[in-house]
Every structure is written in structure tokens, then in C-alpha cells.
Length: 334
Ligand code: PBG
Image (cartoon, rainbow, N blue to C red; front, top):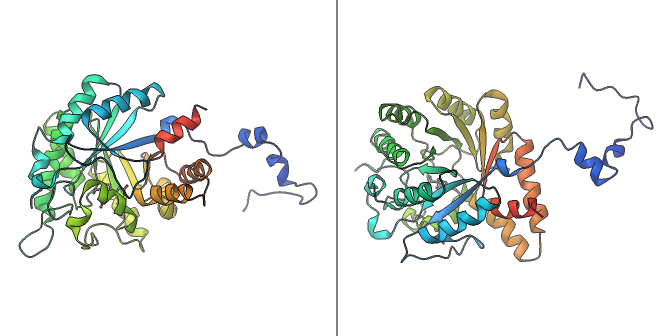
């Protein structure tokens, strides 16, 4: 390290800067504020199941419950949410056509939220997995392969639909090639000039999404088939950076690395190599590990959550999607 100069111990005593809580807080290099956080919400039809067994403390909300919940969190200044629908089994099809129904769960909920809480920033996942009977993020051809180009046409229409129903940020999470470009083109054509695209640009084929797939009801449909032909291989870093930088060229405003904790090297590198905001997603498996550890008396909840989130920030995240966001705002208000 060329700029390191020290005459060494005893002139140098690193512990001086760790002497008291106040001194440590004064010189903390990373901080976490309410503005860094996005709270994901699972939404459901009124007659569908509320409980998500693999994510203790997280549930699926009906429209009414969500509005009540938003009242609570906005009082504490948490103003950014993302929506994930649990579509009922009867509505799931091979091509996920429910995603383009202007009265689908997401569109209905969006309109209600925007009417009651216009100041809330709503992020919507753009992917077919919630809507397909296969549980995959794309349309499967007769040869069993996911048809990239057919799928991205639908994603573009879905993005336009969400934007015209009030969504502020569309977030394609599917990892099809070229989707950012067609979504941006569609948004421009439909005059949704101010809709941001948050690209899940470095999204890995991770095993830590399984509680989320339970929440969406897509786990059983997937029936152990993997998403390895479209999500990035977790052994690869260069590829992840390349994919992300490509998305800036295609028109993404914000990039994302997902999952978070096991992928901090990617996050750090992407932050250095790009000049757009970078988000990180602390995914369902990361949530449930800490939550269950704490419920079983093995981990301290607040301490472990704050450590995980601050380490994600330290690595370069501008914003973090976390199922703990709501807990964190309560702690920040303590
Ligand atoms: C949908 C999507 C997934 C997640 C966010 N959007 C699951 C997947 O790709 O299978 C995972 C989020 C989480 O685990 O919390 N494409």
C-alpha cells in the first residue's frame, strides 16, 4: 500500500479509533439509512394462503392488508417497496399469459397503491416465473428449451403494462438476453419516459432462492429443474460483470447483484467498473438462515441483520432489497 505511512507501534495504536462507541460511530466508513432500503412484499388473492412456511415472519398480503401495512411503514419513512405476486394455480399457463392481463394481481394492487400512496416508489418484478405452469422465467418451446426471443417480447409488454399502471421502476429478473433493450424501446414507444429500469443484471443460478419460490408457489412447478441455462453460473465473476455492463448499454438505469452476501466480490467489482447505481438483493435464503438461526437462539437477530446489511453496503451497494427492511426501520427509530 503506497499511501500507508506509519512509524509503527507504539506510535501507531489502531485501538484509539475503537475506544468508545461514539468514536467508532464518528469514523464508521459505511452507514445504513432508511433511504438505502427496499422492502419486498408478497401479494395474494383474498382466498389464497397467507402463510409462507419457509420464511418465518414474512407473509402474503391481500390488497387491503397491504394498504394497511403501507400506512404503517410510510409513517416511519420507508417509502420503497417491491411487489411479488402469488398467482393462483388455475391462472398459471405454459406461456404465462396472466402476466399481460391488465386486471392481474400486480396491476390491481399497483393502481390501489398509487391512488392511496402516490409518494411510494413501487418496483415490480418483470419475469414470467410467477405466471408460468413450469415455474420458469420463460416460455418453453416444444424442444424443451426456453425461447429467449419469444419471452422478451412478453417481458416488454409486461413492463409497459406495469408502467402504465403506475409502477415507478420495472425490474426484469429473468436473465433472458436482450430484454433490457426491448423493454427500453417499448417504454419509449409508449411514452413511459420516466420509468426506470432496474436490471437484475448479475443474477446467479443460486440455491438460496428456494423460500421465495415457495412464496410464489413456483417451487413445486419447477419440480427440481434448474434455471442454469439462463441465470449466471456462480463460479463466474467476469461473466457477471460483462452481463451487467451490457445492460447499461441496453438502457438500464440501475444494476443489481443477487444474491448478496455470497456475492460481495461481484458487487464490489461492479461498483468499481460502472457509473450507475448498484442494488443488491439479500434473498429469501439469506433471510431465512438468519431468521431461523435467531428463532433457535443461535444468532442474535438485530446484530446479525445489521452486520449483513452493513457489509453489503461496505462492498458497494447503493440500495438493498431485504426482507428485514421493516425490522431495520424499527431499529433505526429506537
Ligand atoms: C423471479 C425472481 C426470483 C427472485 C426474485 N425474482 C426467483 C428466481 O429467479 O427463481 C428471488 C428472490 C429471493 O429469493 O428472495 N425471477
